[in-house]
Length: 467
Image 1 (tube, rainbow, N blue to C red):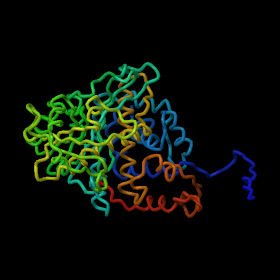
Image 2 (image 1 turned 60 degrees about the vertical axis):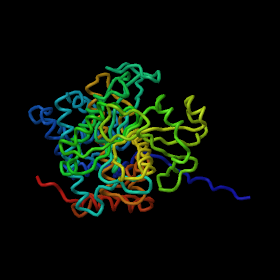
Image 3 (image 1 turned 135 degrees about the horizontal axis):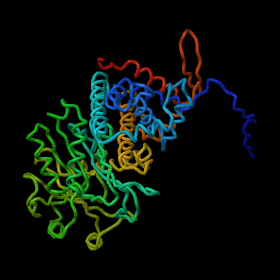
Image 4 (image 1 turned 90 degrees about the horizontal axis):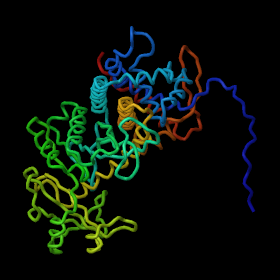
C-alpha cells in the first residue's frame, strides 16, 4: 500500500517584503496606456477634475476597468490595486472612485463611448501592423468575410431596490440590458442598460445599440467592409431590419441573420415540405450534424413588410434530452428553429447560412463571461451610476479581448476570462531593484511564466499612437 506524503509544515507570518499578487494585471493597465485608452478617458472626463487637483479621472476609470477585468465585483475591490502601489502606482480611494462614477452623466457617458472608439481604432491599427490582425469569425469550418456583430439581451438580478429596476418576464427583479459584441474578437461594442420589464423585441432599443456599436468600428472598416448582424427572434422586428437595410445608403454594407418565431403559417409551410428538399445540417467544424436537416421556406411564408430579398430558412433535428419543445415540435417529433436572412442566393449554401446563424449562440458565452467582468451585478441605487459601471465593464471586456488579439497566442488567445485570470492575471511575483530599474520577477516555477513574459515583450514592441 502506498501512502500519500503529508504537506510540508509551514510557519505563517505577515512580514514579507516585495511580494505582489495579481501581477499579470499590470499587463492590462499598460495596454490601456499603449492603445491610448487612458489618454482618451482623461480627455473625456477632464471636467470631473476640479482645478486639476486630485487623481486623474481618466486614470481612475482605467483602474476600475482593470479591476473588473481582473475579476473584481465591487468598487471596494480597487483596494487590491491600491495596496500594491509598487506595481500599479497611485490608485484612487473607494470614495473617490464612487464620486467619479456618480459624476458621469449622459454627456460624459457619450464622451467615454467616443474615447473607447478612439482607443479601439488604435488597437486595430496595432493589430494590422503586427502578424495577428483582426481575425475572421468562424462558422461551419470556414472563415466569414468582414465583421460579425452579435446582439442579445440578458437579465441581471438586483437583490435590493435600485432605480429603474423592475420585475422581469422570468418573475425575477432587476435590469434587462441589451448588449452587442464583435464575434471576430469578442470585443464588447455597446450596451444599453434598461429596466427589467423592458421589451425583448423593442426595435428602437436594437437600433440605438446597433448605431452605438457601429460608431465603435473604425471608419475604414465600417465603410466598405461586409458587416453581418445576428440576433435571436427579438431582433426580427421589421423596423429594425428596415433600419439595417437603410444603412447601405450611408455606405455601411450591413446584412442580417435573425431568428423568427415558429408561427402558424411557418408550421403549415414546414408540414408541406417534401422530404427531398431537406439537406443535412453542419456542425461548427464543418462536419455533418447527426439528426439535423435544413430547408428553405422562402415563397411559402408571407414576408410582406420585410426588406426585399429576405429569405426564411428552417432547421429540424431530433431533440436532445431536456429540450423545451412546443406542441408543434411534440407532434412532429422534431425540434424546429427558423431564421431570416437577406444574404442573396449564390453567396453560400443553405447549410452554410444555417450554421452561420447558429454560431450566434456564442453571444451567450460572451454575456456569461461579461457577467464575471462587471455587469453581473450593479453597485448603486442610482441608474446613471450603473450606466457608467456598465460602460466600464464593457471596457474591461475590451481590454481582455485586445490582450488576446495583440499579446497572446495559442490556447490563451481564445481562453475565457476565468482561465486568463487563473493563469496570467493572478500570477504572483517579487519586486526587486537594481541598476536603477524596478523589476517584476515572476516565479521560476510558474507554469505560464513564459506566456506572461512574452506578452509583456509584445506589449513593449507595439507601435504607439502619435501624441
